[in-house]
Image (tube, rainbow, N blue to C red; front, side, top):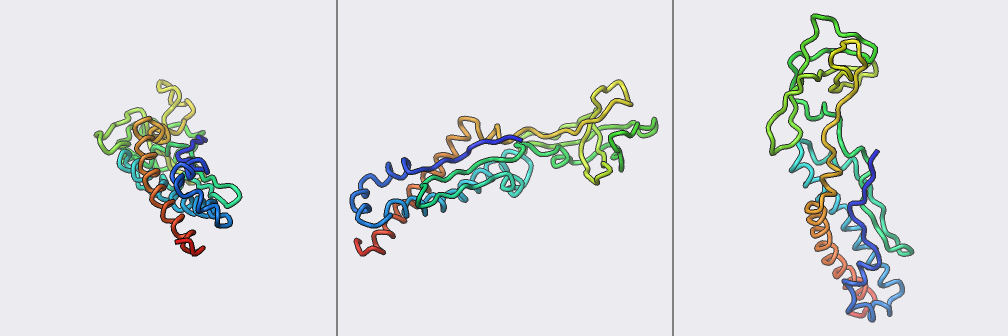
Length: 211
């Protein structure tokens, strides 16, 4: 399992944005903490949606597949810190990208030896939206005893009795952590965070009768 921090916002980020308002916020009990916590907790789901949209725009899969791999750790008044983390595999079974097989084999447990008449492997996949389809001539679609269907290949292509292993697509966690992509996500989140934080600070002051 891969783990990666995509967004981290804490009290230091909030102080930079609200530098000119820290004095008046200090007159409200937990004023700064309330504004910072609310702003962080509102922007983290937005960051998750942006990350999912960016991945979905690059890889041939729906945004919900990416959202399922994200977790949010919310900020509190006692700990003004929130995180958006990637806690899934970072890649999906290649069957999610499969567009067809030359000859799908209905069932193939790990102990199964391929009969001569079924030796027509090959799976068509499309992992990225911007690239064409790929034909994996050494792969095949199989269904395990558990009911799981996947794209598999044999460890030794020259031996039809060789054990099989499941194939996975390119890791999109690595894509999200590329410098240009990470910077783009950070810019989107930071812009929304600053907007939310200023609004939440104004709301705290308004509720306290200071604005």
